[in-house]
Length: 195
Image (cartoon, rainbow, N blue to C red):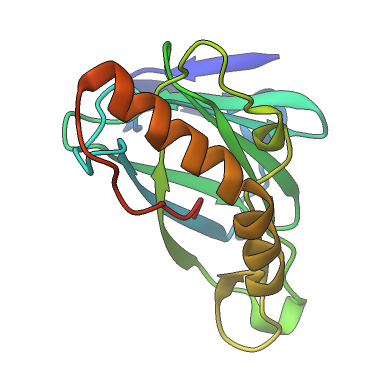
């Protein structure tokens, strides 16, 4: 069950009542009941969304799934940026979508050894392109990237997988730019990478 936290939460501890300010966001119910003795560490994903002309994209929906259930959902700001905090120890599927554009997804494995527990940040850029009629986009049904802890100091994307994905979707990108140039009367651009 999902709950939306508003600006303040009423907390009663014995006879004391506290108003705690919280960020407006959507969290899974199991994340609301954490023990005071447990420290929850997070992976903070800082994303930027750009269209094929490299303009920032407002209103991209970011749906985060954990255990195949919707965990949280939010939208990018007018700057095309978004910050999403994910508790460590889970695997997430993060889906980026906007009406009229081809959706993309990434897999985030936020499992970290106990000895490496702390908060982490990961920066990424996602290019979304228009969904043009007749364009084959089935290659984007698979994740465009896998994000994992590198075992030492930080999170990174699996470079071998990303190279593989870029090679497999290069033809779709080329088809997109050809179709886009025809519909917009523009010259062809360099093929963008997925991640």
